[in-house]
Image (cartoon, rainbow, N blue to C red; front, top):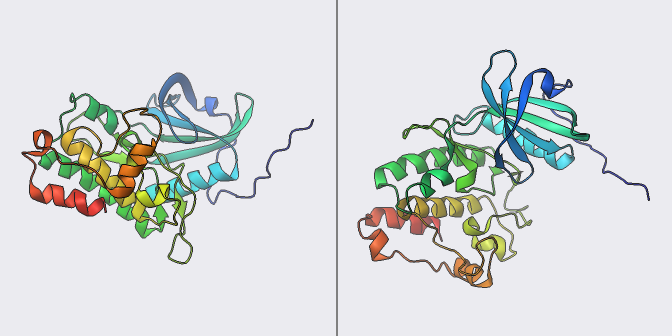
Length: 272
């Protein structure tokens, strides 16, 4: 039986490279991360020797939307990972989009938190981190874009220094053009961070990103998420979904006794 592929209708509004990525870069087998739509590899410029990150997507309208939104969003915001070049070519015998991005040497915010042995950040440090996330998200929302997958794994440090800038990445779930008359309907999410209206199969809007930021701030201050599943951490359990919908989370004295009421109130305002 013949295989049918969907016709690609979206064109890139910017120039792309048509030559092989290996003409310009050495592509290593080192996987830096796995996003919603593809893997990210470490690469090195043949000309300068500088390191970059390479995300490889199967060429489709969905992938092209992701790249276009990400490139448009990063151009005027220092808190979003920069796309430097886009290649259209075959890769491992598949028609692909190859995205060259700045190399974020400091790694994921997730790794920084797990290395702290489940202890949270100080309020001052958490405020600095959440402020950078807020600036990235505010920039997106001003452009009428919802990220829809804010999580620790999608927030990357530029360097290994404690005071490194933090940047938002992975636009695989990003969506443009939401308004009150045409809200989002597709349930795109990662369980720990998902807003109640998304899993309730209700129509929702960019406010789903605010909820996710509230979850991130909670984790920053205590070291673990407000909603979690005791049975299977990889999926959204019925009990976890119930707690998210009810806003059922706690500020236990052991972890939160030294955290200010102002910080707790901020989280409560975001998780409502």
